[in-house]
Amino acid sequence: MRAPKASYFDGKTTQRHDVTLDFTEQALVLEEDGVQIAQWPYADIRQEDADDEVMRLTSIGAPELARIEITDKGSIAEIEDRCTALLSRDRNDRRQRRHIVLWAMAAALSLVAITLWLMPYLAAELAPLVPRPIERRIGDAVYRQALNIFGVEGTCEGGGKNGAPLRALETLADKLRGANGLDTGDLTLVVIKSKVPNAFALPGKRIVILDGILQASETPDEIAGVLAHEMGHIAHHDGMRTLIESGGMGFVLGTVLGDFAGATAIFFAGKALVQASFSREVEAAADTYAIETMRVLGRSPVPLGNLLVRLSASSSAGGSQPSLLDSHPATPDRLAAMKLSRVLNTGLPILSEIEFKALKLICID
Image (cartoon, rainbow, N blue to C red; front, side, top):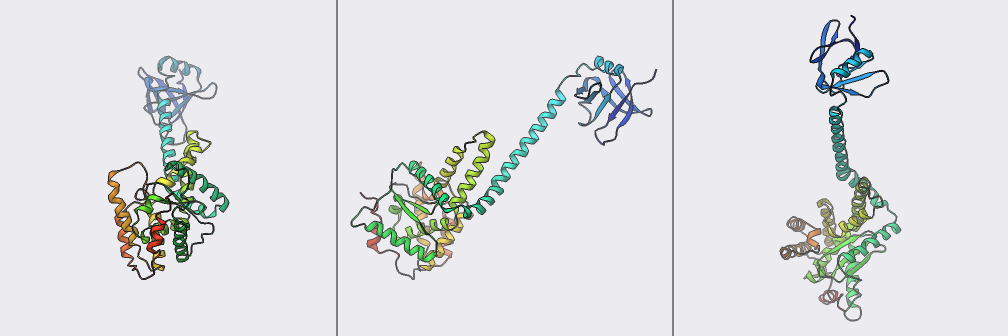
C-alpha cells in the first residue's frame, strides 16, 4: 500500500518538504526519502484554518510556524480519528495572548517615547508659533481655572490711598522690563487675594501674583526676583509649552481611552501649569533670566533664594494649596546658584520703602 503524502514546513526555513505520513500508535511520524524528520504526538496536534479540501496542522511542541498540509482524504479521516484535541484552541489562544502582550508592550513603549521625547520637542518648537490672539484666549481659560483653584472671584484693585499700590507694582514691572529687554507688549500683572505664597506665568503674557507671596516678601528685591523669574517663563514661552506638552499627551491618552472631546486633557493641562512644577532645566533657565535681570539693575538675586528658603522652612506644616516652593523645587541648589552669580547691590533700590509698603497693601479693601 502506497504511504500517504503531505507537505511539511519545519518553521525554520521557507522550504517545503514532501513527506510521507506514518500513523504509529502514539504519534504521527514524518519521513522524507525514508528518513524520519519529525514526530508529532497526536495529543499535541491542532488544526488551523486552511483552504477547502486542505487540512493544515500545527503542533504545540513544534516551532510556531511549523505546519503540515494534507489533501489526502484518507489521511484526513485518520487524523480526525486519532487526534482527540484537534480542534482545541490552546495553541492559538497562547499565540494570540503572546501577540496581545507584545502589542501592549509596543503601545506602552510608544507612549513613553511620546511623553519623554516627542511631545517635549514638539511643544518647544510649536509654543513660539502660536498666534498671539489664540495664546491669549488659552491664557484666559487657564486664568479662570486658577481663580477656581485658589477659591477667589476676582483681582485686587489697588487698595490703600490714591492708587499707590498699583503705581508701585507698575514701577517694579517697568524697571524689570527695562532691564531684561522683554518684549512684553500687552503684559498683564494680576494680583489675587490669597494667603498662598505663589506666583505663576500664563500663556498670553499674564503673570498672576498671589497676595501671599507679597506678604511673605521682606524686601523689594525678593518680590522683584519672583517677578523676574516669571518674566523668564514668559520670555521662554514656558506656559504655552507646558500646555502643549501636557494637553497634547492628554489628548493622545484621551484618544486611546475614549475621551475624544479632550475636555479632561485641557483641564489637567491647565491645572498642571498652575500647580505643578516645570522641569529643573526650565526652572534653571528662568532663574538665569532673573539673575541677569537683577544684574543689569545692579541688585543681587540672592534675596529670591532667601525667600525660597523661608518658604521651605514654613512649608513643613503642610497644606493643600500649592506654594511657590511646590512649583519651584530644589531650593538649596537654586540659592547656591544665585550666590555663585556674585552679583552685588551696586544699583539704586528697585522700590523705596514707602513704595514697598504700599505694594503690600494692594489687596486691602
